[in-house]
Length: 258
Image (cartoon, rainbow, N blue to C red; front, side, top):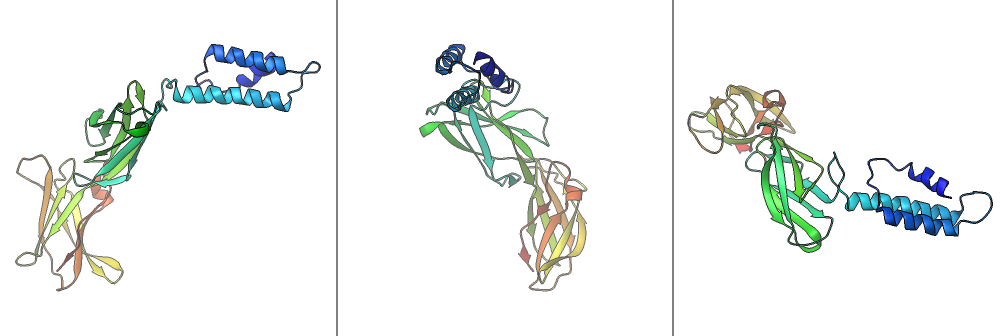
C-alpha cells in the first residue's frame, strides 16, 4: 500500500503545494490499516481514500498556501466590462478573499499600455460580508488590472479601451468639430466623417486631428472641418483602428442629426 500511495502522489503536479506533513502521515496510517492482506490490488475504498488525499493536497495548496512564481489563488478577481472608454468609462472590479473575513484591505493595481509599464494603485477597498469586495476603477488606454491582498496577488485581467469622441455641429457654414480624449494626444492622426444611408454608414470625408494648445488633466485632440450633408441626415465621426495604435480600439463618436 505505501508504495502505491507514493506512486499516485507522484502524479500530483509539482506546482501544487503539498498538505501538512502530519496530515499526510495520519492519512497513510489510516489507509494502511484498512488495506487487506494478500495481493496488492487497489480496492474501491482504498482508491477513494487516496483520491481524497490527492484532492486535499490540491485544495489546501490552492486556498491556504499561495503559489510561488505565479498569481496566487487566495484572492479571486475580475473586471467588468472588458471594454471601456477613456476617461468617461466606468469599470467594476470585484472579487473575494479566501479567508472570508470582512475588514480586509484589498489594493487594485493597474498597468496602462500607454503609460510607463509600471504597476500603480487604481483603488483601495475593504472587504465586506464573506470577504467579498467591489470597487470602481477607470482606464485611459488599454490596461491590465490585478488585485493584491496581503502577500497574495490575483490573476490579471485586461480591459481594452476606446478613445472618447465628441462630435459637435453642424455649426455656421456646415462646420463640424470633433474632440478626442485619451491617455495621449493624437496629433496629425486621421479620422472619417460618415453619414447614415439605410442600414449602412457611408464615408463623407476625411479629416485630421491636431493637438490642443491648452493644458489640463485630459489630453484633448481636436479636428475642425466642413462637410456638405443634407438636412435631417445622421452623421458620426470614426477613428479607425489604423489610426488608433496598439493601445486603443477604434473610436466612434456620438450621432448627430444635421
